[in-house]
Image (cartoon, rainbow, N blue to C red; front, side, top):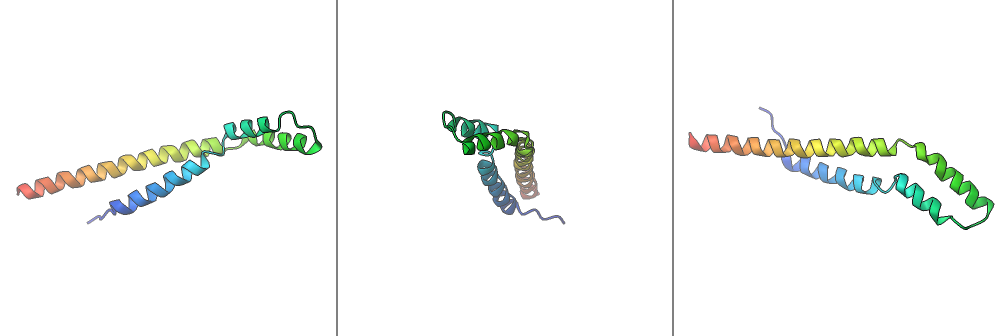
Length: 96
């Protein structure tokens, strides 16, 4: 017999979605907004910071975020399917 802990899966999915919310802030839009914040400032520091942020554009963060989002959606579907199957089996067993 296979036992699936739906509530545990839901808890873990909740944690994943919370992490995705935090992680989504690290994106190319974050980099663009941060670079814009340095606009008009003149110093070696701001030039170096803009250069550093610009170099971060090739990060794999967006791809990772998209993959994790797809995984979370698949997990949501899996949980829904488990619940529907469980309910269907329960109804069938009650009819016997």
